[in-house]
Length: 479
Image (cartoon, rainbow, N blue to C red; front, side, top):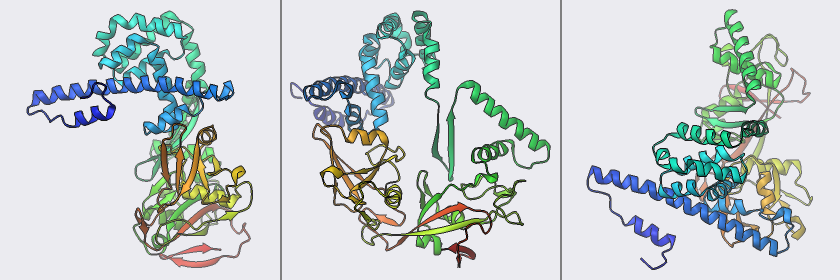
């Protein structure tokens, strides 16, 4: 090893360590590697704090306003750690807090506290002042040996008790801060289901759950054959959307190949904002028009027929118009056909195009929803308002991209590719996700990508003349 080894030297040496020959030796290696992980994470934290200081000095020297100094630092750390920008900000905050707690940080470096448990210590003291946080660290210093064998709950209890003793007002401050973090999120679940999660103050959460449970028990007592959980889920959706079955006038996008829709091909489809769905489910979403008691809970386009039959015909069938928007893909690359505009802002059609193509924020490792439609090369510098020069970004990533020292440009690739360069000169590439029908990184089967838009309208309310086409034994309305 050289006198001043680099991380690459350490990685090479670690890769050359042979696996132990017996069970006790293997356990010793597992423990040693766990200690190594803690030491490496501590080194990462030290490097992150030092990098933040260097960047802030450089930005201040460059004349950046004081309120904007530090912008983009967490995003660079996130890219280096292959994490989302939001998690990069949390990791930087964790590093700053830990380096201000010398005893906890020493336990972290030695492996007595893992990165996760060090994070728990910071989380329980984050509302304290820097002085009180240091006092908690000093109080727990004698217990680091005990914490070495403690579980998550024991660590949280010990740190929280010390924090309450030093600052009795910290609990109300934490509660007030938590109320400000209330939100609703959506994430995919197995088998084409989804988790709709609400983070609420305890009184609101308990009240909402009790109301759903009360109505479910009443429905079950009246003879409803659905389970209690099914009734609660269906009632929640109906109350949120204001429509029985949960199907409202909201547009639902489903992107699939023509082979999947018309030839029963097995190529999966994609719902922007959700993810990949099986081909059979996609066809069901695109073609199913009839609903009934047994159809409750199906995703988006089907629902349970209830007492309120607005939007249904006399037979209790949901009236659903399907509009097919054809998006052609290049046979050799899978790229969507380009769209062009001389407008300063992306027009609605091009915005929809970018959202379908990019699906989520294009920053590497960030899968946040698209909120901004961005010119990769800025419009002020001559960048055109085109699909090739456009990308979907979340709000935070778009603001980061505009900070000094960040540049981006589209580069040739099998699919739409963006190369982003950070102020330190590191480059990262982001490629649009493959569309349904892609068979490899450089080619697809010649295909027509079909976007099926589902919209509920009252019977005969649309006034559109429709062409009836029989697909898979069913009639589908195509304008």
